[in-house]
Image (cartoon, rainbow, N blue to C red; front, side, top):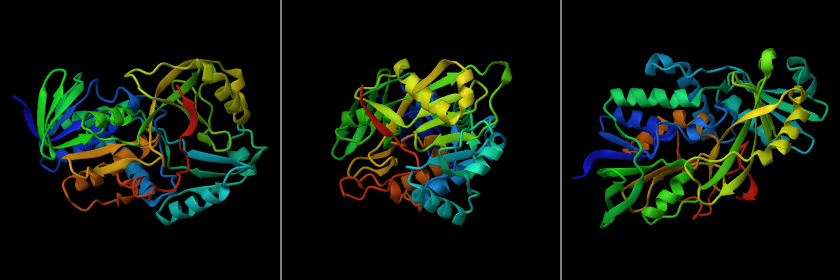
Length: 388
């Protein structure tokens, strides 16, 4: 006998649990299935950055709404997301496409964002530990910062549970059964499920899941290593979240230790559930980071936090109904998920049930690639370091 619900969400990462919460508020019976625990994979293996500095209108609006949600999250959900209001600084050198960033600042300001443009002298004055001699400008938004992404997922999970969402964890989906144009049953390693609508929210594993129901998704898993410094008794350096556009590296102050990441990602054809840290990448990333933040030379990279990015060809997610199956895709956030998923969740829930979304989801149309209408590049995306 299959467990029956209105909506079956496959994936209990931030996308799945935030959408479950929003759909439960519409009075729908929601079941969430995941092969692991809540938010313990991609949603927990990142720097936790939340920002509204994007280029496209939908992403700017989603990022702004996420920051609003984070501000009231503990009061609504009962879990502190541990927001650290350190700001975001995109720093550009001589080869950077500054026009793209200047245009994005104009859009952000028009939509209420507080982003400003800083000269190298202003950067040096605010953050003396940052090397500015090769910079031309930076864009800075003081309202942005970092959160504990695992706590954010846990808050949505607990609030969804209070609203009756049924979570079935540690069950891997192994088969789909179809009848006509519908998926009639979803079979896991432990149970069978039936729902009016199936939602693929599997992140880096979305394409592998799609293969099981006879679809292809242009979502590639890319290894995302983050290396963590032992800051010692001096504590975390007083800097914002630094995005070095020209060198394609990030430096993020964090209570667990300063984090170094990069946009270059290695594609993984068959991602396992637990990615292995590739320490061979660390010297190159750390070397670039030290050029921008020389204080790192006094530190040692002693730990890592490695996960996957779920990357699409244009670095925007795929959100929408399948052309024929009773299936909806929410995947491919390309490293932007923490920033835009909470802000988009209510609009996605509206689209699921046929209502008009608050934020226009046209940017994320599932058919845009086959129609040749893929979107413009975002401010920060995934560069290709080949295949592992």
